[in-house]
Image (cartoon, rainbow, N blue to C red; front, side, top):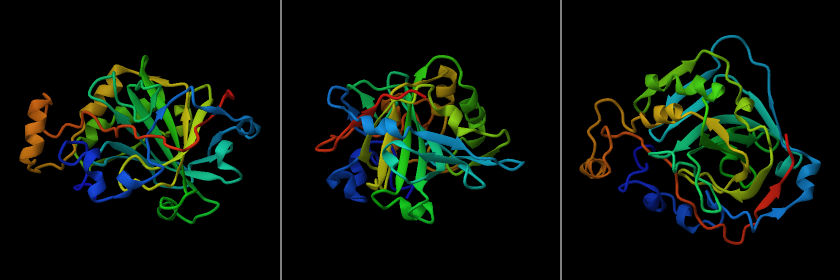
Length: 286
């Protein structure tokens, strides 16, 4: 799968439908532009506030950082790590599977969702699966109520200490397929903003296979990360050591002044129409 898609002109979002038709024909694709004027305030969401709880972990390295060829991803050696419940998730409890990041070639772009047409410098996605309805992530990923993803906007400011546990190791996973253990305990709940007000809608994975299985919870308040942390993300390479890049990708990289062939300077899917879907908002604070 990783060789079939990416973010260049040759294999980027405009081509994904060739292998995954739902990317073009689906009715609940993501990401979307969040039009704040059309968001419906839903008091029922406040009755059961969103709650993300970090569970106790054992000693030793728990998290694994990897370069997927499309960005970096953090998985855990043991599950569950974090539980998610409340808000639009009803009575179900969701387990965290992994989290990853999207960014742009500079800090004027990078987030997948936009707010009133304006992007942020990046976006973290904390991907959870419904443990009440399914026995494993792969089953949940293809079903309507299978996944819940927390979207957290990134803006440039001070260094983020919890994210630094990841970005400080990116030099060890430069190439696709490389991985490194994160020795320090990582608490995903420390990546959440202090204000847990959010927008929610029914959508999809923003990467192939673009399954329409996601309840999106996009927090209104961004978290601050440093420009240096974002620059570390942009140093990742989308190919394995020794790979020969195609003429198309080399040509594109020269035209866009990429510093190094195969450098992953941006990895976000453009927004798609919300269509007839309802965008709800919850103004509760955390």
